[in-house]
Amino acid sequence: MTGMTGMTGMTGFLTLLKLDARLAARHKLIHVTVVIAALFGLLTALVLPADPFLPILFAVDLCVLGFMFGAVTLLQDKEHGTIRLYRGGPGAGVAYVASTRTVNLGRSLISLPSLVGLGEPRALAEPSLIALVLLACAGMTLLGMGLAVFFRGIAQFFFPLAAVGLLGAMPMYLVFTPSAALDWTAWLPTYHVLFGARAIMFTGEPSVIGAAFGFCSLFAVLAAGFCGVAVHTRLMREAHFGRPSPASRRASERPSRSRPRARGKLLTMMRKDALTGSRDQITLYMLVSPILLGLMLALLMPVLEGAGQAMPVRLIATALTAYCVIVVVGLMLGFAILEEKSTNIHVALDVSPLRFAEYLGAKLILAVGLALVLTIPAVALPLGLALDWPAVLASVLASVPFAVSLGLLIGVLAKDQLGAVAVMKGLLPIWTSLPILGFVVPEAWLWTQFPLANHWGVQGLFHALGDGVGVWSCAALNLAAGLPVLLATAWLLRRRLGFA
Image (cartoon, rainbow, N blue to C red; front, side):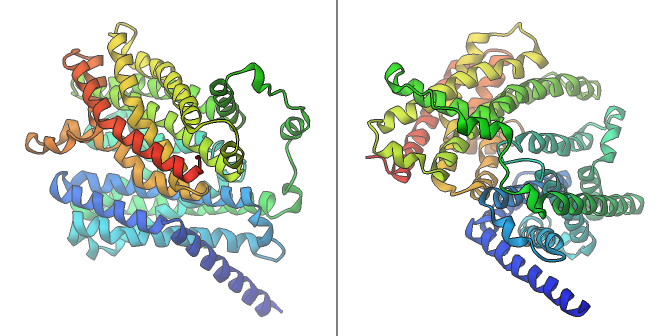
């Protein structure tokens, strides 16, 4: 009987593993991961030094992406109700968690040859490097799944996702500017992945390598325990399925108060998008995240400047943060479009008198208003209010077309939340990471940034916050490069949604 139960558990695990692997392949997660790893590997081989950028990528990209992958996989299963199919036998929760973790480890293992083989080929001969990265990725995947149990959807999960992303990136500041003020980051797994991988690949410090393996092993065990308990007690019990929250019951019972005759079409669409964001806490996330980012910069920049960094570091970080806030606004619109697709609201819109220009115009007007408002705290907290605000807001306005295009592409390419993660994995580094190169690449390579609208957007914000030189020319180039991308994505979205 015990052997039969064990065989059933193993059969269930293999079945789930096959389903999860097919799901990851169907959503192009594996393809996107390999391509992005190859691009980062080429970038490291041609432009950036392997030490420290490869260890930083291990910590920030692979580990944080593992957290995101585990969480979104579970959240999508909750949304579609497929977790009901996984219940019913002993060990069902273990098989479910193990299959998701194994698929993510396989995805990470596939990306390592592309990333390391191009950036630092000799490191492929270090099995300890692969073991450390996979150990940390396993722990982060389990942590993401355990936390996702307590959330309804990916929109609500923005808060922990943003917090983990910000905290996970903190140890990289110690690479460039060692400071006792950041010693607390030694309690983060990304710290040990970063410095452990660096020791394995470059410095060869046995004590650092041993500490990294010890911490990551303990972290993986604790994350596995937390995830197992959360999944077993909340997901694999019937009482936690299909029970609408009191708020959702009141919302479903509340009579509709929509009066299209009293409102214009644009205002109706803007109101719908705002209510969607408010219901799933996206609006709250957008209101809070610029303040948190601004406070983080205000607290962190004195540490960096005290370590010998010049004032431009503060300006660069603030300009990048402001641009990321605009991109987050675009992501909100993308998830609003994704929900319209998943609930077939766009089918009703297709046969309504609403034209696509009005549909898209409502979203763009809302995006412009949010971008202008939310950028203010992200900029004012680290730099104060004595700024050239017309130049700052003009740079923000010029950045909207390209930044919002990412959200429209999510609406075009993604079919569900896991597909949205694949799109974000492939495109978010292009939108938010490439502008960093405008500050660090050699002068001979700077021409490669000129066709990119986000380069001119971040440069315009940098100069608007600083010397004010060339702000308006940067804004003009930003619009010239960003508007064609917006028009192209709008055309694709119109075809995807079926507007006449």
